[in-house]
Length: 107
Image: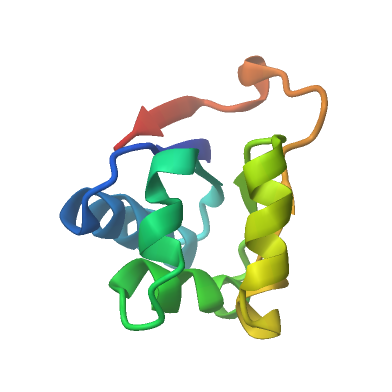
């Protein structure tokens, strides 16, 4: 199953639950793409937050880099993060077909 999981809520619990679901599904062979919306950037910038650590481990779960919105803040964000975290992030592709995903979940 191919899923898109969007983290949009700026609370640590919601972002943790969404990211934990993504990692769990990837463990069982599902194709999961994470999208981190601007409200979760504050959590991502905190080295001790759970989201920060979980995003660093995407590669261990054979997950692609998480998408960020294509705006000025995303470019600034990737320049401010440690390299090991920044390599797990990329700007969202210009064209995305939502039909490519069997399910889209938002947290």
